[in-house]
Length: 93
Image (cartoon, rainbow, N blue to C red; front, side):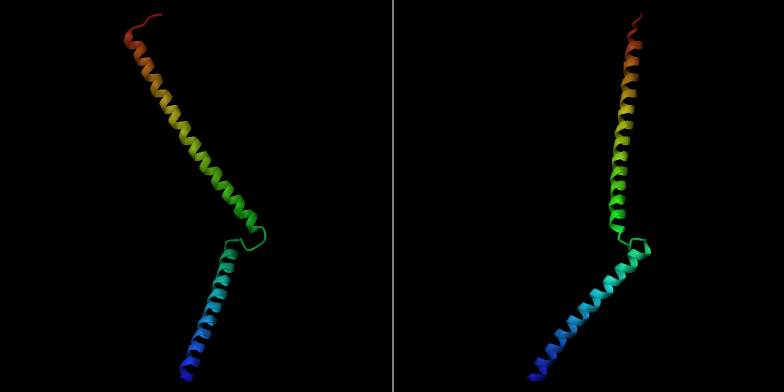
């Protein structure tokens, strides 16, 4: 029975060692990945905020541009319809 209990202890200890090794390896991998893309320094937080702000601005520009184009097309179509009705009815100045 003591061999079984000591083996369980060793298994738990081994599991903890594996968890520590995995945690350290993942942190080191994350550091290397951030360094590879140039985000390893203290300015990285500012850079990420700036990138998020730029992306949000880009999305707003796309949305506004789309709305403007749709409005312009709608205005042009309504203008053509109005002009067509004007000429079709034969209204003379």
